[in-house]
Structure formats: structure tokens, C-alpha cells
Length: 345
Image (cartoon, rainbow, N blue to C red):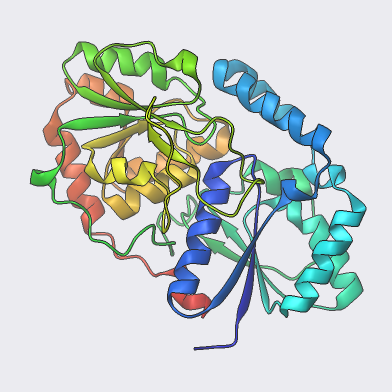
């Protein structure tokens, strides 16, 4: 195995960025490589983290607030503690990092400082979304020489490479639960709760991911939860997850919600980058809800163009036919995508 030492830079404000970073680290380690994960928020003072946690709650409760907040967000790197940054730079030097993989654009400002102090190092920008996500736009221009890696490419119209969520084969269609997985991404945002009611009314059984106790309101639904007291900057693991009211388990290897996705007929969600990743590796179609910003709109358009997903409205016009979902599943099964973790090693 090569002597590559990979540092993966994520952000805790989006599980659709952070979880792919954890997955990439696990896939590298499984092959005998060395990988570390740094979370931007670990460099921030407690009061900043408290504000982030409050924003998460507000964005979950009202999607309009989330959409407005996205437009007002600033470069999070301005909030870091300089002493914490110095300690992290010293850790990177000690580890002998040979390549950085950046999943959040807010890291680029700090990487410029590191390179100015310690000299050049290889940097990949790994795009989980199919176009530049807001963190890269808000970070601004950089003088760093970057290699751009796309896990989905709206402009190229395909999936150039990916990060396996698991090495296990997708669950065969005939062996799947006759259920839909309904969720709002890592922060529980979007119109999924309203759509869950419509899907119940036409006879589907649902697994719904709840984000706080107040979400547990509809009878006839199996609810699951991410531990609401957990945040990505608290530990190095996946989000603790489990059936509502039955406690949380911190799974290893991949995130717990993926096990539900593998068994479902479809995942009903806004089109975040992490949701695309789950869809690809489970061969579970996406029923696409209102996007969180222009980048997610492009994600949706790409998934539909590839035959991997369908908008909620179009599926509704087709009378919510399960046969439509099976066609999308078959297209996903045929996807043959290079493994980014293997390329890194």
C-alpha cells in the first residue's frame, strides 16, 4: 500500500458533507491507507457552536427560514479560534499529511494559511453536489492549486466517481420492504412532512426520520431519529441513530439511516448531495422534493436526467405507480462508477 496520508476536511453544518467525509476515511482505512477527518466547527468557540445549533433547529422547523439563512450565510472560517488553528496545523505537520481532501469550501482560507507557513501540499476539492455548493462560493477565490473531484457532475451529465457507502450489493427489488423512506437530509429541512401525509393517504407504509420529539405526530408511521443532542464536532463517529423512543446506536462503517434506504422502494427527500450518494449505492430511487437552493435544483435535474429519480409531482401524475420506481432502481443497478477512495491510494 502507498504511503499516502489523507486529511479529510468536513463541516458539521451539513451531514451531507460530513458523512461522505467519514465514509471516505473508512473506505481508505479498509484498504490499509491512513486517513484523518477534521471538522471545521471544532475550531470554533462554544458561543458560535450554540448559534449553529439554534440555527439547525430553526431551519428544521421552517423551510422558509432555512432558505433565507442560506442566502445570508458568511464564510465560517472567520469564526475560528486562532489558537485552535495553530494546534491543528501542528497536528497536520506531525501526521505528515500528503493530501488534503476538502469537502467544505470554508476550509480553503485556512489551507492557504497552512501552505504559506509550511509549504505546498496536494489538495483535492471533493464536490458532493453536482455544481459548486454555497460554501465554495462564499469562500471566494483561492490561490491554491486545486484538483476538482466530482461525485456528481451536472454540467458533464454524469457521475464521474463516487465514495462507496458500503461494499455490499444492493438489496434485490423483490426482497425489499414495501415502504418509502421520507426525510429532510441531515438537518431535517424541506417539505417532506407534508408529503408524508399525502403518501400515507394513498396507501404507502412509511419510515420517517424525525429530528425532535415534536415531529412524532402521525399514527401509522415508523419513526426513526438521529440523537438530537449529537453534533459532528463532538466525536469522530457517525450520527447515533435508531427507532424513536428506543435509544440510539452509533453505527460503524456507514450511517444508520442508510440501512433503511437499502430496504426502501424509494427515498423521498430534497436532493442533497449526501442523499444522491445513498441513492447510488443502495440503488434506491429518489422521489425529489423542493430543493434547498440552486445547487440542489441542479442535483435533482441530474438525477432525473440519468433515470435515477423522479419529481414528486411527476410521480403523482403517474398515480404513484410502484412500477415507475422499479424502472429507476434498474437504471441505478446498471451504474458503474469509479471508486474515489481507490484512486487516492
